[in-house]
Length: 198
Image 1 (spheres, rainbow, N blue to C red):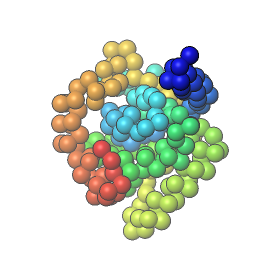
Image 2 (image 1 turned 180 degrees about the vertical axis):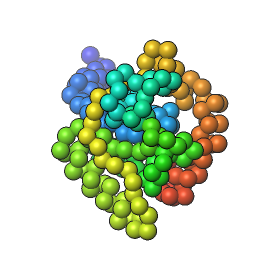
Image 3 (image 1 turned 30 degrees about the horizontal axis):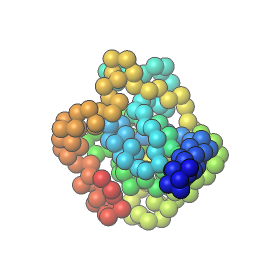
Image 4 (image 1 turned 120 degrees about the vertical axis):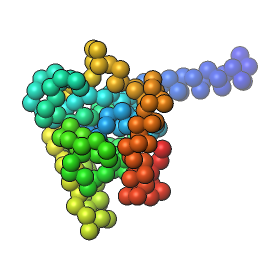
């Protein structure tokens, strides 16, 4: 067997072995329009999946066009812990929301568009609280309203409303027009400056 072939086989085995041992974890985050949150997190290297849906309310099986009272539009982010930590996810989250808007996010107002971090365990809670405190300390003249809440059942958008999943990929012109008209990126840049990545 020649050296090139041995190297290729060895590399493939190491890559497969590394992938097999990769551990994934999940985070549930609300930041207004789930189209935008899905887009922002799928661009983060190490994220393996982002699903749009609802969480935080009491109504079972909420729908976009039906009853989702009490729920937040949210995303379920799955990430590779060899590439990202929960802290990395939080860091990316904060610079993609307006933490001072109690009525919603950007042009979208109403309960379902508010921001929130949903924590699944005590470790996530501690990190989320610490990250929120860092934002509070940075913006001493403004009130950070993003709550840290216990994780509840996450209901993915499905059925006839499945078009909301990957909306930004499947409808790029409409999505980009909506995002621009909503003023999301300009507001993020006003708050976070060059920490914002698009």
